[in-house]
Length: 429
Image 1: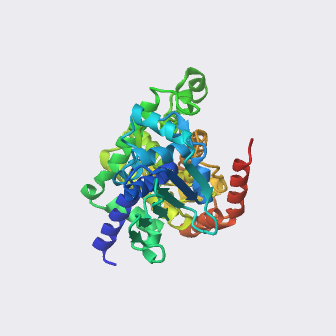
Image 2: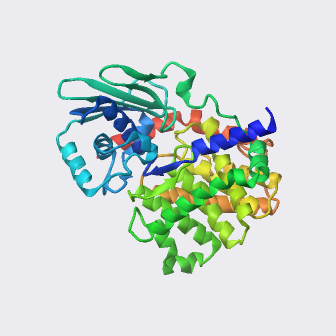
Image 3: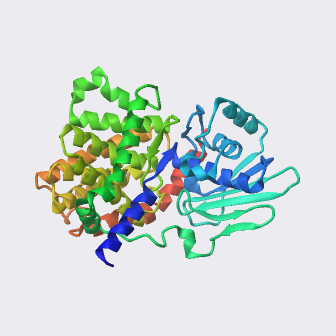
């Protein structure tokens, strides 16, 4: 593949995977599918049936729905049917008003929403919505593979789209397959004007951190780090500022604030975690705008690369992936070369591998803080010439092999963990 073609393919991949989202992307994907099915029905549905994969259920059970003060799928589905617009993609509920929220609550009270596990599927990201009207006419919409990838849409009269049994249904058929050398070379050499758009991630995600300070969201972790007691422990340092700004944005997002963030690989938290640590470090370290652009590109593209073999949803917490990205970006801002970046990746994998995903929820801010703390530590160790060796654990001399060791554990070895986590979550009193 020619150099220009590679560059164009990577830019297309970045634009596809780094997009705005309001709220947790799993319930928003369900709301998006509901909106599209309702549009195909042509009227307000009398009944809605949602058939979801276990990972979608897990990630949507305990998270706040933006602007509602409520958690979980029923309100997301109700609002998707009533005011959702599929053209908005993961910002599907952006037209929410106090009046439409009341209508959504009344819709839930009618008990016309049925949510169930989709049996007999292997796809971890699967949303099937079936809407019916007063006469029993039905429409449906199915999203699979990624949060906005429709593979089936039907109206009462016809099948509008059907990609269920084609390679197009995977949503990755045209994606360039990355490796870390390719990621690093692109981030550090691509013409600046072609990647300047990555600054949008800073604009969105740092704005979310600022707005979080104005409210009380989730567990207020970001605000806690900024308070006198915490400052007496952490001080007013780059380290504390990075944790506070990253956690604040996550607090707001998981707490249901109606604030858009720039997501990565279908996850707003991953987008925050790949952006804010890099942006804060660049500001505090007085890096140039070009260095910031290249560091953000390196961070986001590293996360996308790891997700290519891990999958959109897994038993492995997404902050592990995004924190590896931010560690690479911070290492670059510290003056690190490719070898230093590789060493930071290995240090990260040696530490955080195995952190479970037990759904999207306010306490995700705690996990993100753990990931970001490790990202800074791994970058510092790397710049000191220290790296976990291949004699230790799952680390390999080859950095890409180390990454695939991580993703093999997350995607394959932790399947039983995923089942156990969901079982525990669904059987609590």
